[in-house]
Image (cartoon, rainbow, N blue to C red; front, side, top):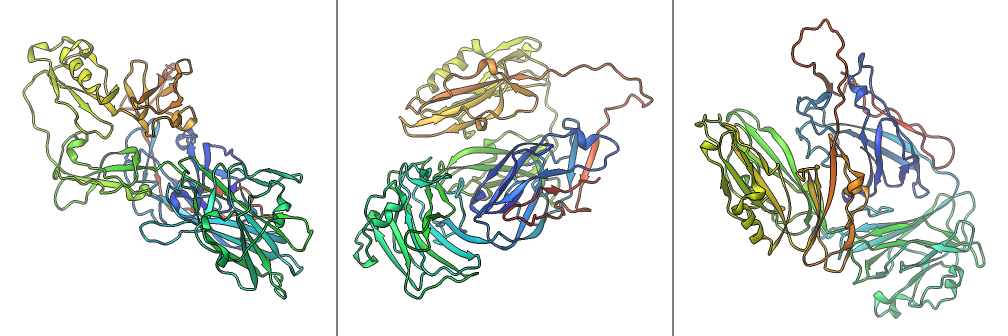
Length: 607
């Protein structure tokens, strides 16, 4: 993952050794853009001799990137940072190799304390000309302060959040501006912007934004407001009726802002003006709403209209992820270490409580919980780095139990809570005999009873098999409360192979789970294109819906054996130790042309 300043974007979506390279603007609401890709060249890490691995990602600067010194941060994260074989090699990142803020990138890995990151500064100088920039900021409800101004709010704006726009004009040329005159047409459904070849074209908004107060921050300029309906012929908006702030009785009715230089006000080369104004989405705006704001500018009457860069605000679904980590130690003198893969609960409602007791989660071999108190969250935050729950365990040797055969069917909701009594099945004398819970009347009766309030999703193991000595069978039946749309991932036998994704919405609202986000790559499996769900799009209902993606298990090719002089012991495991002997980020190169960043290189990993 690269974390770059707002205004830097991908110049190419392709990079050797990386797949699914994507940008995430205003990542976690921190005013920077994350560029994240999946490592797919695992063979390069195990080939001998190991000379290093290099990734090249092409970046460029947008027109709203101003002259300044900036920093790019780089991170490498591996889920299996625990010395275990997977599938050809494994990594270990020393826990002292941590530095810059990690954006919670490691909190879902096997060893959250082990991080690998680095940063590099660079200077950026844009081309000559006028820079007309529009950006937007989100007000933090907990602090009352506005965050960084960004060109795109990304997935960090939620229903009811307040906004503030910042508009800037920078004279980056060599001629003074003696008569600036600009108009900001506030976003509305099907609004317009200047087209690439003249005229107008869609600006991209699907809802409206209104003012909540006046423009601030200007001296030497006259600010006026209009409640007239904007014209699709952009130049005609200069003919609208504009009045001063003292004539406005309802800010929500303002459709346009006009800023005009007063007599004698000149914007000289290298000077800039910046002004701000508070705003909010329309009351009926909901998740999926987008508002794109730009302003128009001319330097004199009849002059060619120029347009600012866009400030895009988009309302995200009010859900966030919660991570549960498991920490244990063998004695009171030892430090706590991660003892199990974290569990991530996706799509949790922001602002609601999330309870978490050790008994809600699977047992961990040789460890018992320190307590069974509720260590959950009183309120789920929009920032997933604040939604980390740590459960603590102490070491305990597993007692030897008498040989027996037994089975238990459990019933849990999407949060892992018990929703029905366990159903036992099997006896000591059943050793070697088959079981089939689809024919178990007690299990089926429990499922029927739960059907009034829940939808059955899947089981964590096959519901049929053979009892074995000293191997108790525990099968969990997973349910979701009615009303939700649950996307589940199963193998050809209907057994869960990936945590489901759960969407919540009002009855009648549209849902669409047909995209790549809902078709994850699952290690060892391939999506079965012949069994694609027919209900991947639809409407939320009170009864809810289950969308099933079926995956086929990958076949492992059998290669002829090659004679070897090595002794026939356990398979060889290659381990790579990642450390900071070399920098993660090499120098960033800039072209002499305007607003372009050349491809940059990421660190060679050594062992």
